[in-house]
Length: 341
Ligand code: ADP
Image 1 (cartoon, rainbow, N blue to C red):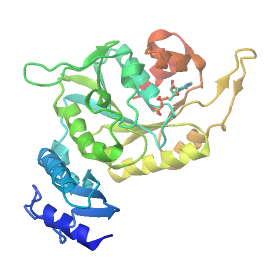
Image 2 (image 1 turned 90 degrees about the vertical axis):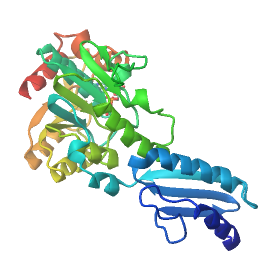
Image 3 (image 1 turned 30 degrees about the vertical axis):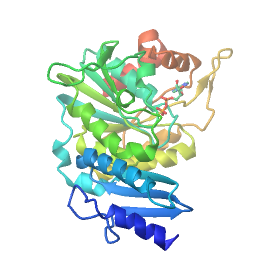
């Protein structure tokens, strides 16, 4: 790295102060990281998302000012949320919602059917006469709008809260309505936390019996913040039966244990395939992998759901199985799970 260019960058950034603690962004400030290569500058600022607006302004000023310096070809500024900082605030009171039960649906991996499960469970609970909302917090692929057959933007109420969109009697709010999924993850970090907070506090949820949260897959910052901040009544972990998916589900189980969120149970999705021709059950991955895992961790096993072409078509076309085929095998399984909660 050219010392001269780096020095000129620091001479510029040190004129600006961290909105959180007023310390200048100079070489002694650990919250700024500068990397320069062949005139291309990458700056990373560790931020407290409480001051997101001010940091965004500083990022713009850095880009504008540094682009004018001699020898600089491009400038990138990334804001990354400091989870320790943000979590040190009183998380208990950060996310508030008037729901008797808040249940997070989690998975170690993507693509195991977590959203399909969240949507059908919400519908099944509603069919049992409960007032239900679904909050789609899956930043990597919000799929609730598609699976519930909703499109459009939520409107604001008189007291400037977002009105959730309603489908099949369920109030729905999705991160997909608030943050563009095309935004790179590194930029989304702080935005996501703000958006998640808005999905709790800034939405007219009304009084709910159940709020079902479709968590992003994995055990990263967003999952941990949600688990800690939203006073979860419990969590349900969805896994497929094969070992690789179960290994990741284990991480999820441990995360909820660490933050003292009760695990209501483990569900095995895509457990087996029922052949159209011979009506026999084929265990494609392995038999009862999740069930054995639940026994090992001493958590309830809520049931296994088959791999089904109809279910895939129904959920991808916005008609949850419990709506489209309420008397079918799959809908009955969901109703059983809903009752067991
Ligand atoms: P995740 O939320 O874990 O990423 P999704 O619920 O989005 O997973 O499911 C991924 C894909 O798999 C979707 O196309 C969905 O329709 C399909 N799918 C989910 N569960 C089943 C199942 N039991 N049988 C067949 N397809 C399923």
